[in-house]
Image (cartoon, rainbow, N blue to C red; front, side, top):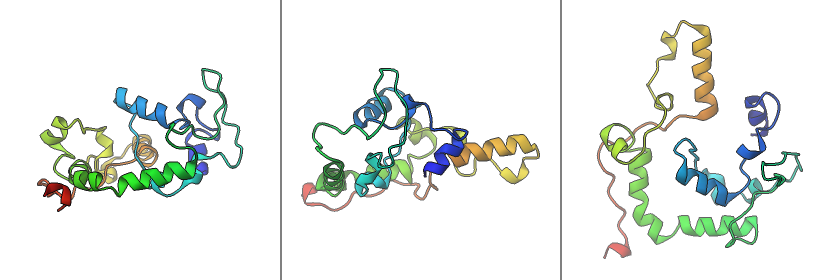
Length: 175
């Protein structure tokens, strides 16, 4: 992964203020800035090492003068291992299980595109959607390369699998 990030930034790490350095700050930024889109990747539920700068890379200083190193954890997590353990407990909780169908609707379902996506504030840049551009029909080499780089470096939404609301999971909470 490090190699990919370095390639994206011309052989250097990104600007220190844009690096993932704090769970709280990332959460805050995602809540107030619609252009700051983050994916809660699977590693948040099984890989405490992702939160530690084990190679002691010099990642620079942020505008406030603080040095970027290990990710700053929320106060409820005393270690990366505890952070991962609590995240996994939350993910596997009955509460999350009862809400999972709503996430499926956003990511894979009927709220991924169209009017329902707009109502759910779930609309992204057009190149993130599968089928939004036919790469084989682009003759301009520079344009085609730019679009491919956009997709490669910033991702795409998954294929839309469902056109109707996903049913909620049967649960003791619904009884």
